Image (tube, rainbow, N blue to C red; front, side, top):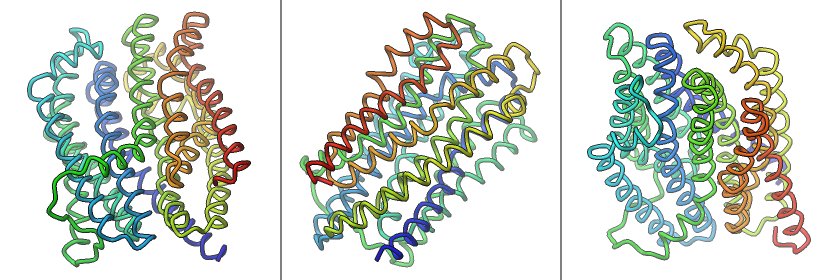
Length: 437
């Protein structure tokens, strides 16, 4: 049985890591092409608007992974009608948030742009990017929802194919819209908005060929089911929101310390950090169906095996990521520094080497939260996620930045992840002693 679970682990994790890395190309492509065509101001505009993308994407992951976790657990127990009810209510939640985001884009984008800190130099670009992004929110939400359910329905390869197809189309459309068609920042976000539409086109083959075992059933929203989806989806939501909170908080602090150039340097770090987060998100999404399925079936041996495989894989990938960043920091910074701004370069290189010390702790926290959620222990997962996203991060960031200026800014994130990893370790040890897991 362990040999089979190892094969399943390799299959699910490899496909999801590849898919998530491709998904991170959304922002990589935008950042590269915008920095090449619009310089530091374009990079600043992207960085200011991106926290809202984290909210949209995090909401989609909350609905998709929360619903997918509940669906997988119920399927493993043969409760097919309740599993279909989970999918139906997940769709209702996605539609409700879609309306909220679209209305915000139509009527509040200017106000939100000011709140995000855009000055007159970058206001127009930031507002354009933000408004179009919010109008495409329904596509982002439904794409996340369908990908998670297809993955939990036993088709991780199709989910990966959809993510990669959408991401590669975004790269191609970014180039076409920004350079030959000269559409500027609008072209960048239009390409990003069309990517999930193309991804859903790929996923549609699953339904056309009637492969899906989940169905939309006619029923009113059920608050108990909605609550279960949201509760299970809080950790992936907060994981994504953490990126947005880090950006929003650090943008605020850096604007006071070093102005737009400092924010642009942080933009370089942010876009590379998305690749690291994508690796850990892919790993956590890969293990989630396996954990839920085996936990639901009462197979504790396989649950422990998946946990062990995930931790070993995380440590290996963390070492590879940090060593690459440490020895290639100048080259990575120059990719997104088209104007060869030396101040920006200096900040970015120092930031890359310090900020990514967080890698192993970040990976541990993301995987541990998924582990608890998938084994029907949402409370520790929620605490871990909220600590790393808000309650530890905010005071640490303000304290270190006041003491060490920019060096403190770069060190705040790894220190936060380290503190939360210690707390997560305590939760895991207590759960093992109580024989809960």
